[in-house]
Amino acid sequence: MPPIANASSCSTLVDLKDNETDYNGFLNFPLLISSDGTVHVEHSKEQNVELIPTCIKLPMNRDLRFHLDDEHAALADYSAQINFLHLPLHYENSNCSSIAIDEYLNSIPSLRNSADCLLSQNVFIEGTGDILKYSDIDNTVLNIFQGEIASATASQVDILMSAKATTCHIVAIRSNSGEVEALSSLTHIDKAGYENSLREMILEHKLHHNCGKKSSGRISKIEMDLHIMGGFDDVDNSSRQITHFLIDFFAQIAEEEFESITITLKTCAVSCMNDDGMRCPLGRGMGILCDSGKIFPVMASTGHYLPMGPEFALRSSRLWAGSRENLSHIHSSSSPGILSIEPFKFSPFEQLDLVLQLSDRVLLECVSTSPDVEEDDFCENIRKVLCFIKKNSW
Image (cartoon, rainbow, N blue to C red; front, side, top):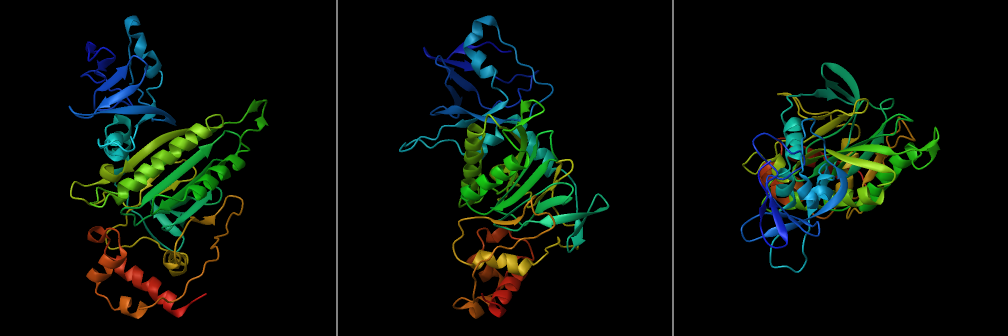
């Protein structure tokens, strides 16, 4: 390990990366660790960003090696937490801008590697209805649309998936306690919000595993894998706002549920980590195999479109039904085989006919948060939904 140099009377500048060792979870920025144990990242010559620990675990690198001399005991507390995510402390009412959350996450080698592993998979899927072909095998699949959430076990559904995300983020979690069948959930988040719905998702996992109750003479604890994919480096920072919300939310949950749930951020491919360098998302969809927990990018093979059923137009009409405070929960492990569409009111709106007559380019500008990067069938699908609303009202 390189020598430790004194940065000031109260801080020590530590080089946590050398040519021989890959320190899993550490930044590609040097760290400043004060005598009181506070950790800072040296983001630029003008600015240091204080880091605060969370209870979210990072994926471990089997080759991780970290050595401390006795004289460096001030670093011991931090070294014991190296596989836990630390986050920048965002100062309010400060003239100094903090490092962007996605840029910071991208600087953590284990998370950068997780994004590369997901986005580099050459997996193409195709199908119709509720059957999807993955690895040349027909699987039952539940397609979760924007603003929806679903949970299932492997005995209920083979694959949970969602697609067509640009600034939206797709979140998948899978929990296992060793006592009952593992439970998977997936949701398609289109804004920074839905905290109540996400908390209900966590509660469903706790209830599924009888979390907190004694089993086999011990208190059951859940191991929960977390996967997040979506967004890109858009000019409006819409993606980054969702990234920030989700990371903060799961950090809060990991702290609140520390005694009953261990959350590991297994995959993180968000915002700039999911950008091709030309302000366009690399990955737009993600699926999870409920039996193994394996995740994969959802992409249609050339000349094919992804399965959009069931009830694509009806379910998508919810996006036009006014403000939405909660996600639509379409499947629960306690009601297997039942696709639930919760009641909502919708009706033709003023100038709907005019909207249907707009050119594709104008329609994109009017209804999309990222008109320059939408897929070819975006306007076609929007018109299908609007025609459904025009013919049906409730």
